[in-house]
Length: 432
Image 1: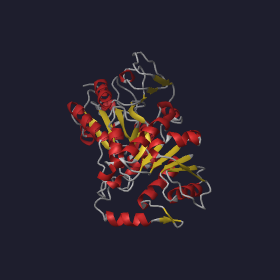
Image 2 (image 1 turned 45 degrees about the horizontal axis):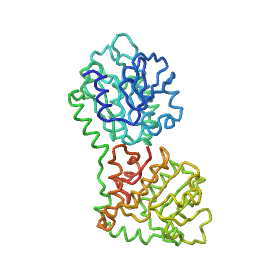
Image 3 (image 1 turned 180 degrees about the vertical axis):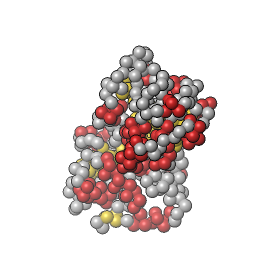
Image 4 (image 1 turned 90 degrees about the horizontal axis):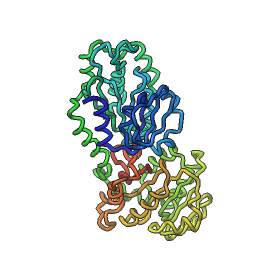
């Protein structure tokens, strides 16, 4: 199996929604994509016929990543292929940038990681077949990012590496970059024989790629909805959450999720927060004060069948409305014109039907990269799922199982304190 056959198998198995390629030159690998694609190469000479809508950028990858990549790809990158400059420090920068613009369940493929002859691994090209010292990137990922799933395959001539388990907000490699680059240039990662490279890189046989990709696809689409709190004193934690007040107003928010919201607000800085389900108004008040403290000029809108009447609600708009029919309050109050980006928090009836209705409404009206938080899937672990017809968890699972899902689980938020250590298991959703 050569690298084009392997990459074709990756495309066919993962069926990416978009594709980013660093180093396109003649377009042979770019031609494999059937998804909207971007090719980056300062000297591209495309000779292969391209099947997908494709934008080409005649510039270095460093220059390209100064752009707003999400606006070019229509959201986070689903599949990226790194085949640019064959020096490890360049490939490392490409990896850092590709992970930054990808989503958590995206995949990054790296070419040229397994030279067949040590002369092919020189930092300057002296042979027709040339991998450069890209194998060092595998070593660097193994050392600095053991959280990633890094699988290398014995693909003909050059090898191929498939990286999953991405964390787009992770800064480990960025913060360590200068030290790593110095190490590369000073020979710290240099290996002297192809046997030593193969021992460190530990390639799997190319024949296992198809099976491994199928398992990867399954991992990307299936996550347990059991909250990480299930084995703790969940009933005691729930009792405390129900007693939680903010500025002496019932807030009813899990303290773990308040911490997750602090990070989400700081990173996403929404111009509008739309809360579905106001209850006593404490959470809307909390979000308003957090945004003010963080210097986020966000408009706070909260919708409920019976909106609260708070004396301290300046800066918050409470509207009467039904979560199962959001089109009416949105039209009545001009909410479609709220400034972007939006953060939507669904915290209303928690029934399967209402949660599904909210997902369907915001599937149409959220933009790529905006967030919807589906609260209180913890109902399952509290034993209350039946009375809510499966509630938020069933609604999310069924919605994501549709043929062309429009939301993805942002595991960085769901797993911030451990796997689904939140009242909202798999409930931090990003529109794609």
